[in-house]
Structure formats: C-alpha cells, structure tokens
Image (tube, rainbow, N blue to C red; front, side, top):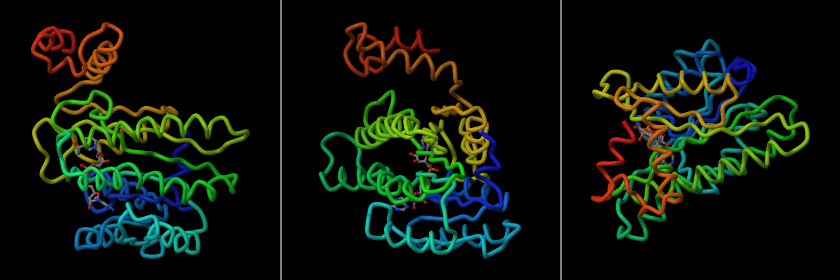
Length: 277
Ligand SMILES: NC(=O)c1ccc[n+]([C@@H]2O[C@H](COP(=O)([O-])OP(=O)(O)OC[C@H]3O[C@@H](n4cnc5c(N)ncnc54)[C@H](O)[C@@H]3O)[C@@H](O)[C@H]2O)c1
C-alpha cells in the first residue's frame, strides 16, 4: 500500500482514543502529513490539549482538525459524529479504532464492568465501522481500517479476563471483516489488526522495556506498506521471535491436549518458559 493514499492533504483520518498514547501518536502522524484528522476521545483537558497540538503541527492548521469529544460506546453520539464529519470532510480514508478501557479484571468482576469494557473496546469499534463503511464503499479512493488489538487477546494471560475477552472478540471480528471486505469485487478497502507490545503513555516518560507510542505508529506504517493484516509489534523486552513462540505455544494447548493457559500452569510453565525464550 502507498501510505500517501491514507496520510496526505487529500485524506481524512478518524482516530479514537486520540487524547493520549498510541491514539495521540497516530493523530500527530496523520496531521503532520496534512491529512484531515477527526480526534475522538472522552471530553476533557487531555483531548483539548492534543487538538491544540494537532492544529499547531498540521500544515493546514485548524481547517484540518476536528475535535470530537464523545463516548465510543454510545451509538447515538457516533451517528451524530458521522454526520458532522461527512459534512465537513466528505469521506474517511483511515479509521483507527484504538480507544480502550481497562476496567475490571477476573471473571468475577461486576457485570456492569464487563458491559462497559465490551461496549468500549468491542462495540465501539463495530459502531464506527458500521458508521463509515458505507462512505468508504461509495468512493473509489482507497480506505483503511485499523483495529487495535492486543497480544492479550491472543495468548490470554491470567488476571485480565475482561480485557482479554474484549481484545479476543476484536481479533475475531477484524479477521472476518477483512475477509468479507476482500471478497467484495473491486474493493478498495482493507482492514488490519495492529497488535502493540508494551507501550508507554507518552514520549517523555518512557517506561523501561516499553516502546514509545510513535514507534508503534512507525511500525504500523511499515506493516501497512507491506500490506500485512496482522501488524505485530515487539517492545524492548519481547522480540517478535518470542511472540511467535508464545502464540504457537498457546495454539499448541489445543493440539497437544494441554490445559488452557498452560504457560502459567504449574505442570507446564517450566517447559513453556524454555520453549518460548
Ligand atoms: N499501551 C500498551 O502497552 C498496549 C499494549 C497492547 C495493546 N494496546 C492497545 O493499544 C490501544 C491504545 O493503548 P494506549 O495504552 O495508548 O491507550 P491509553 O490508555 O493511553 O489511552 C486510551 C484512550 O482511550 C480513551 N477512551 C477510553 N474510553 C473511551 C470511550 N468510551 N470513548 C472514547 N474514548 C475513550 C481514553 O480517554 C484514552 O485517551 C488500546 O486499544 C490498547 O488496548 C496497548
């Protein structure tokens, strides 16, 4: 893929979770290349500050930046945003479903926490895809959907059950979405799953072992240029090779008849640790 088709003055990026972290880095990347950016996050100072930064960095200034304070788990707010965005910018070239809540932990969490996590991390993505896919289909310009998953949605480490379930659902959904879009004749749309490693909240205060958010976005761009669907990121502690071994070990639980999450099972964790380093 030629990245100018999604990040240039003629393109429009919709980015959720825009106020900080990987979402903010994606906004800065798109805005610095002159794309129109719709920055979506919960209302508040963090979003306002990011929007100011984007206006400052964009060669097209405030004409190119749309601040969109909303809750992605509310389909009515998304529907309103869709109308405003299409009136102002006319199309969507890049949809980055990145907003996340990490509410709740194990299976015994309150049902309200389960619902909030699924509403934000999973349903929010579905609402946005359904809001913008028709506009993407109605143009001959290429469009790209990137849903942000997690290694935890693949390998399912203990103690983060709710988050893992939301990310596992998003992986399955995105795989099927890509298949359906690809199967449509002359489709100019592609879907991708970005799988970050451990990433710091900002560039200033980087945790030991973690990547900076802009490294994740650079890695995403390199993956998009290679037309990769799964864009798997390492970090400064976990290499891609280790990730591959961990993913293969998890799949091996089914094939080898081991218990689930055997990497953390007392009978298996030593073997797993040897196999995955
Ligand atoms: N940071 C990591 O180490 C890491 C690792 C793997 C995957 N990821 C994934 O990458 C993505 C970005 O992670 P991050 O750490 O940069 O995120 P973050 O926690 O720094 O920021 C998430 C943003 O989403 C916003 N948000 C939360 N609920 C929302 C809602 N209902 N509506 C609108 N906005 C909402 C928050 O306000 C926040 O600005 C997430 O999808 C996360 O699951 C991150």
